[in-house]
Image: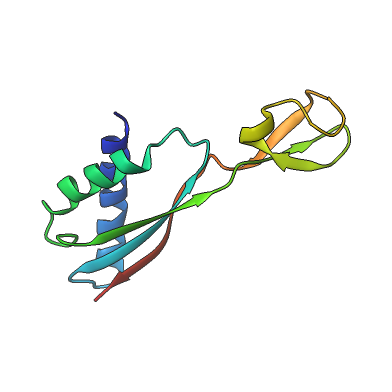
Length: 114
């Protein structure tokens, strides 16, 4: 379960944000999670609750997770398509010469604190 490691890294980052912005508490964090990131949102939320409540800055903070759809571009025909539905082979021209554009990211989008 790598979700706990991700949460520990998020907490470290959020504590740095808290120090830089003179925050005494963070109440809400919005996270953008790529569809093919390999992270299970339910596990991530469980790990978040367990770990965040053990910190002074994040105790009780909500984690909102927003999924970012995976999109791939075909280098042969230049068209984009949904990655999960079609994989690495372009459904438009059949080329395997494709690149994932988005959908594997894990990014803290917003932080609400005081």
